[in-house]
Structure formats: C-alpha cells, structure tokens
Image (spheres, one colour):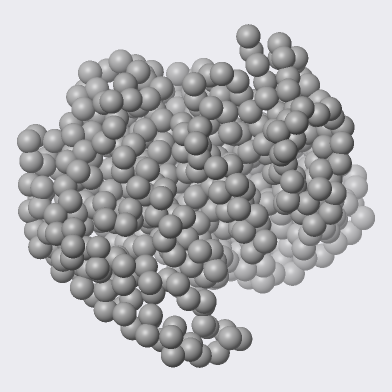
Length: 596
C-alpha cells in the first residue's frame, strides 16, 4: 500500500480543473465526513478526506483552510474546479493498493462505532483514522487546534508522536492502512529534521525558533519507529537530534545542567515578559521551565539505555542534579502557604460564564482574592525562588510574570515518567527519594486541593493527562485507592472528555513494553468500555482494568492471541469470576495475567 500527497501551489492567481477518471467512483458519507473510493485498471484508490484549499505564509505555516471549491461527481469520474490565489494550495491525499481488501477496513471504520481520543499536544479530540488526514500536509505533520482563530498551523513533532501512538492503538482494526499511516508519520518527522539536527517551529517568532519539548518528542518518535522496524537511519537521526538537544542547556549552580524551553531563551527578547534573575545560578534569559527540563531528561535516559554513550550519561547526571536542587529548595514557607491557600480557595467555585450569568458575591470574592494572589506570586517567586509549594502544587516556571496552574498536571506527569524510567534503569528507591516525595505531595494536592475539580469544570485541555499520571503513580504505590483513579475517569467521561494514548497501555512512556498486555483483546468493541493497564511495576503480574463508563450494561469477554500461563478475572468486590458476563455501569473487572 502507498500513500501519496498531491498538491497544487499557486505563485499567482489561477484557476485549475482536476479530473479523476476511474471505472467506478463511490462517495461515502458518515460521521459528518466524506471519503471517495475509486476502482480502476491500475488498482484501488481511497481518498480518505476531501481535498483542502490552504493559504500559506512565508514560513510555510498554514494561515487558513477551506473547501471553497466546486465538486462535480460522475459515475466514472470526479472533477474539482478551484480558484487559487497567490500562496494558496489545493491539497489531497490518496491511498492506493492492488488489493481492495487492504482498503476495506477503513470503510468499515468509517461507517462503524469509533472510540475518540485526546491527541496530546494540540489537545483536540479525534478518531485517529478518520481525523489523522487533517494533520498530514504535504509530507509533514501540522499541529491542528480547534476553535483558535488567527492561529497559524506549523509542523509539530509533538502532534506527530501522539498521532502515531493513537494510530498504533487502532492497528488491529486497520491492518495495512495503519502501517502506511505510521510509516508516513515517522518519515515526515525524519525528513523535517534539518542537517544540523534540529526541528524548527517558528510559532513564536519570525526567526524559526526551536521548542525543546517538540524536539524531544521528535526524538521519541524516531526511537519508537527504529525499535519497531529496525531501520537504522531512524536511530542515526535520533542521535543527531540528541546532539542538538545537548546544546539547548544552561549551566546552574554546582555545575548542574538545565534544558531550556526554546532557543529564544539562549538570549535576546522573549515572547512573554521575563523577570530577569540569576536564581540557582541560571542565566537571566532562562525561565527555568520545569516540565521541559524533565521531558528532556526522559529522552536522554532512553538514548543512554540504548547506546551507552557517555555524553548522555553525564548530561543525565547533571540534569538530575539541577532538578533535585530546584525541587528541594523550600524558602518562605509561611508566605507561600498563605498565597497558595488563597489561590486554591479561588478554585472552589463554579464557572460563571455563559448561561450561568454573573458570579455570586462569594464567588466574586474568591475571584478577586485569586487574582490578587496571582499578581503577588511571581514577585515572591522572584525574591524566594521555589517550585514545590507547601500545599503540593508544583509551579511550571520561575521567571515569567504569570502562573500556569494547569501545568501542575503536566509537571506531575513528567515527574512520574522520569521516576519510572530511573527506577526501571536500576536506580534504588533511596536514590530517588527526593523525587518520589515531590510526586507524593503533588498527587496529594490533586485530591486535597480545589484545582483539579476546577480544571474539570472549566474543561481545561490538560486535565485528561492526569489519568496517565495516576496510572503510573498507582503502579508504584500499592496503597493508592483504586476508587480515586476511577472517580477521576468517570468525572472526565461524564463531562465529555476523551483520554490520551497513555491511558490504554501501549504508550511506552506510561507503560513500558515489559508491562504491556498485547496477548488479549476485548471481543466487544465499545467506546464505553475503557481498558486501563494498572500493572504493578514489581512484576508480580500484569493487570488490566475493564471499566464500564457508560449508562447501560456492557458485555465483557476476552479473546487471547497467545495464552499466558495463568489468568484471573476478579470483580470489583474482590471475587474471582468467569467471563463472559455483563458489566454494570460504573463497575469494573480486573484481569490479571501471570507469566510464572
């Protein structure tokens, strides 16, 4: 199977007519989307989405998209009549195969029930094989965000990584199509890498700056594809990109190392006002963005485990030293306790926009106090640098003039991914005590404070990643109540949220390969049944929670691709049971697989 990008780019105003002739043309409409299926002497062709008219800027960012053209359908052909202006393009994607059966799975998915997911990065809800085409543009993966106007779309390795993971989740249903799309995504990231080892983004400046988190995710994707296919060029390019990553650093006190948020932090003007300081021995333009630093360490650990290169080992050692230093410093606890008490109190209210009208007097008071705390906190962080607050909240950065409260979720996720990678790399529990204590306090704040409930109520885009974080946390903490995890899952599903790739047990950053469960699958494909991998990391067994998040009973049965040595199915009441059986709403069963 092959996938082709076809694009007509105008350097002046012109009119084009594109005609496609075939032995038969079938137009299929479902789920508000349209696809075209062609049969011809040369083979079978699928246009999974209608062509798109795009307007571009000089940075090759997408300014506007539309389907403002004329389509003429016939029994044996189709014509598109398009008026293109300068710097506009007419773009289409075509899948082709000599076997019609390769394309039929897409048509079944197109008409059937499909699970939706949150695509991490752009944070949009998608059904992977119905929606991935909007991200795939002329050989690159472009970020796509719904509801944001005057926002130029740019190539994003972060969107590519998590789109790749979502398509991988659907591989059993889609066969060769999933393989073709995954190959296209991986090769797009490979080919977008510049000769000096960096990806460029330019979403903040005219200078085509590089964002470290996107860069890190590009390396992860190259490594994933290398591990899946063995194609050495992907490892070679991952190492080239890693060499550039090592240049995006700042030396802190004691010779420790910090990974910068983006290349703009290397010097010059920044997109946001920066409070210049030399806290922890940093340079004045370094904002000390915590989640970016932690994510860079995670990809270096993968590279070090795979290659043994000492430059990665040294960077990890110095980077962990910097993380431990900033998380361990806790000055002015009384002042911070008061300010973050006020900030948290401001979250103990309902959203008041839209149909609800104006806030009550009590809510108004909380809003005013919260804004007061929000204005004061950056000044206090400047005077008394600190990341881990007395109530367990973890701030994102040190030097910007605003607080990013929802990034508590992202910080927690990155701390847990880092902890897991270090623990499974042979680090002793005592060596990681400083990190686990920060994680423990951050998780505690999720349930003892008001922030998480508020983020759910206001439909914050980052909150679904809390489920991924809690899955990792529970895998290392036997005492974590399962009810807490499930309450978050139900609360999110009830409000229309969908979950990111790591929830489903095949994202190696959340569930390492040795704990994944690929030998069984549910016989009943229902979007209401969520399968959560909660395997403990001590290796006693692997465990899958099958949770009914819907409003009616769902039949639960499993099929084995290969038989483990022993299987137990345990009800939510703790009793051993047999499958198949109906699962009531808000109930779950645990499936445990023993390998010895």
